[in-house]
Length: 359
Image 1 (tube, rainbow, N blue to C red):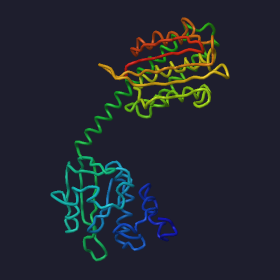
Image 2 (tube, rainbow, N blue to C red; image 1 turned 120 degrees about the vertical axis):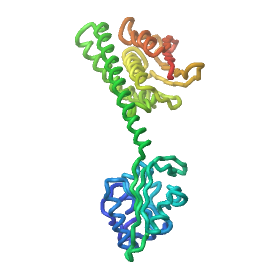
Image 3 (cartoon, rainbow, N blue to C red; image 1 turned 180 degrees about the vertical axis):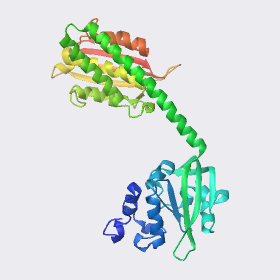
Image 4 (tube, one colour; image 1 turned 180 degrees about the horizontal axis):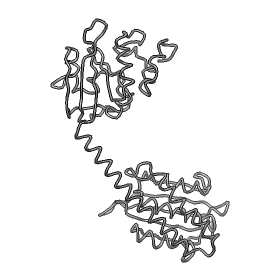
């Protein structure tokens, strides 16, 4: 609700995201009506909930209109989905049946549940949860029960799952760190073998290590993988090649395992630098079309990525023989990713195709 709608919009003060949403919301469409009409008992209870570091919710009145705090988001979802809604619409198990905490509170009784199996509605979809719940009545100015205070915690089973997920993520991150160090060691070793001078080594080594770093930076969560289009865009942008100018990208959404993204990111880096020196990015008329697709297979899905340069007749050179680029494309990728790489000169440029399993 805006200041023009309700002069009480400066209340409540603070309260993080949920407090801000309470100030913004048009409460006139809810059973609570405008905040300026709220009794002091409701305001005081709301302040208590908002500033609690523990996940705490307040269901007010016979309808159980929900208020809560930011800590509730981990258990109930984003506040916009439940703030001002009826408890029965968000947690139907807590407003009826054997786990009726709201009914107990309105009758003046406290009630606790341990590892309570409840359903939480998120975006209209039921999500099962195991919660520890401590509910107690909250009273109005007359001392009569007017609502439910409830403290929420993840149940022992969910806590155990969360702990195991943290352990699995820690193991995965350590494994990924070892893999990344292995990639960097290989880059250094092969760059040393392929470089003729220290200046040449420094120039190429810096670009290759940076390409590995860009692949890692696009993986906000290793478990979710790396978006292929973002990986391509970041590498091309680093070389000042922008989509829509000399480069086009086309293909479905693909999430790459981090290990694959590191090697493929290096390959894109080598293809891009080769295009700058010998191919499409070295001529105003040059163009690069990059497309990819996922092809189902008997054992695993396969990614096919095609890098096609045009407008450079007679200049479709492959990365230098026995150079790092050739070593990467024709030895590293086949050995480490079981990839198949082909490099085909064409009348107006070149086509490089990389096919590799994703599963």
